[in-house]
Image (cartoon, rainbow, N blue to C red; front, side, top):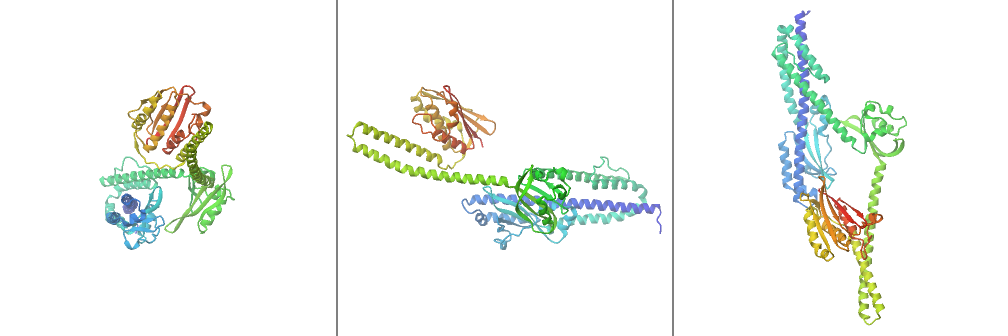
Length: 601
C-alpha cells in the first residue's frame, strides 16, 4: 500500500524522532559511562592517597623497623584498608605490595604473602572509545586496578593497589541505560501518534534538531539561539541538545588541554619515546626522539615510519619484528644517526595491548653517552671516596709515631738538662716542628672526616653576635673591635648550628689576625631575594694579592707565619655542606671582604 504525503511525513518524522532519541541516548550513555569511570578513578585515587598517608603514619610509629614489616604489623593501617573497601561502592579489594609484587597487606587475608598478578589500569578505560568502553564494562566481570607507588627516601619500596570491578561499575551504567530505553520506549509510540496529527508542523523543527545532532557529532559549535518552531517541547529539546553540545565541546577542549599537558611532560624526558599504530604509522614522539626521526611531530604524524626513515635504518627491523608477532626487544645496543653523526642508543620495542589486542608499538631510545657519563661520575666519586679513606688512614698512621717522637723529645730534654745550649735549642726546634706537624695532621683529619648535619632553623644574627662576644676579649687585646650591621628581618637558615658557628669563628678570627695594627671588623647580614641570605665579614687588614685570591680556600695554603692553612678550607667545606657559596674580595693594603651565601630552605 502506498502512503500519502501525510503518511510519508509521519513515517519520516517518526524515523527522525527515533534517530534523535537514539543519538541522544547514545551520547548520554557515552557521557554516563565516562563519568562513572571518572568518578571511580577519582574515588580510587583519593582512597589510595589516604592509605598512603596512613602508611606514612604507620612508618612513623615504628621508627627504625623494616618498612614492609612495620606496615604488615600496624593494626590501624589494616583496619583502614578494610574500611576503605566498604567506603567505595566500586571497590573489590585494597592491598599493599612490595617492589617485587608480593602482597604485604590485603583486605582478603589468604592472599597476603602471595604474588599479586598485574591487572589493567582503570584509567585506561578513559582513553578508549565509547564502544570499547562498553565492551570492557559488559564483557564479563573484569577487575581493573588503580596503582599508587610508595617511596621511602626517594626509593620505590612498594605500591598501593585498589581493585575495581566492572560488574559494580556496570550497575550504574545499566541503570542509566534502562532509564534511556524506558524513555525511548515511551517516546517513540507517542511520537508516531503525534506525527499523524502534527507532521506538517513538526517536520521543520525536527530537521533543525537533526542538524543540531549532526553538528554535535561532528564537533561543530552550535547556534546560540535554539529552535523555536514547533512548540515548547521542541524548544526544550533543542535547548538540552545545545547544552549537551556545549558540554561535549568543553570536554573536547579539556581533552586537548590534557593532551597538550601530557605532551609537555613527555617532552621533558631525556629518553626518546615513539608510538606507532599497527599499520606502522607514526602516532606520537617526544622532543628527544625528534633528532632520530629527522622531522617535527607536526610533519611526521600519520606518516608510515618506513617512509620517514631510511630503508636501511636499524630501528625498522625492530618494528617489523614486533609487529610480526615476535617478543619485545629490550635494551639492544644500536648505532643510530643523530645530528649529523652516529651515536649509540639502547633501543627497546614492545607491543601496546588493550584487552589482548595489539594497539601498536612503543619504542624507547636511551642515549648511551649520557648513561656512560653518569657511570663515569659514579666511578670517579667512588675513587675519591676510596682515596679519602686511604689518606685518612695514612694520617692516623703518621699521628701515632709523632706522639711517640714528642714523648721521647721531652724525655731527652729531662735527661740532657746540663747539655750545651745549642743541643737544647735543637731539641726545642725538633719539638716545635713535631707539634706543628701534629697540628697539620689534626687539621687534615678534621677536614677529611665525614660530617653528619643536624639541621634546624638557625638565627644567623643571634649566632654571629654570640661568636663576637666569645672572641671579644682576645680581639680587644689586639686593638680589634667588631661592628655589627644586622638585618632585623633576616629569615632563619636551615643548617647545623655547631658547624656554622665553627665556620664563622674561623672567618672572624681570620679577619682579626689580618689586622696586626688593630681596627674594625664589620659583620653585615642581608637578605638576597626570597631564598638566600648573605653574611659579609670585612676587615681593614693588609689584604690579599690578586694572584693569591683563588688559593685561600685550598687546604694548607696560608700567608700568615705559623698558620696551618686549614681554617678557611674548613669554612669552605662547611658552607658547601649547607648548599651555600663563599667568595673573597680584597684590595692589597685596604682589607678583605669574605661573603658567605646560605639558602633559607
